[in-house]
Length: 259
Image 1: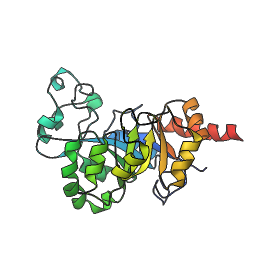
Image 2: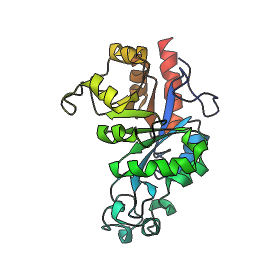
Image 3: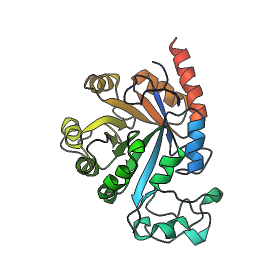
């Protein structure tokens, strides 16, 4: 299996290459979900970047993982402000983040990057806003796909943006504890063309079966050479990483160990 690079002509869903995805950019080195972090990951060769979106009170899509800014705020002035969904974009962007950064909109990330974007829905309230934003940015919309742990959010996204691919994120397999309908019904309901699964329950047979059905399978997280070797042995199509430079080295090591 070859490795996808930032300058490959194909997208990660069209290539059989192993895809190393920058998790919130290069968050091991630069504050997550910031332009600086995404650009660093892209410069280090990631052909795909993962980011998180939530709605602001005035209907903008902001790139934030947590419901609040407490964890990433530069100081106490940015903490205990409540949910970002209750703040306007101006209020959110006024909060200084660690390292001199600020919160960005999805549109700003579109303008600052060139590679494929895995856009994770953290709050289902973003779904009605997607059509307007993506309609205003047709070029960018051709290089994104939506992912979420929330199956209902993915299913609802089929109506406003049916042309945008979707992927379901799972903590583990099998899925019946959280999704009693079972994996096949879950995939059909969400229209997911990719599965992003934690390690538990992942087997080479499961991976091969999903690939034969036309879906890509990513495993997460990869935070060590051992994790990468496990991903390669499973035959998955890619993974998300906090440290892209290290991950590319781990991948080469895993391939060399396979002989």
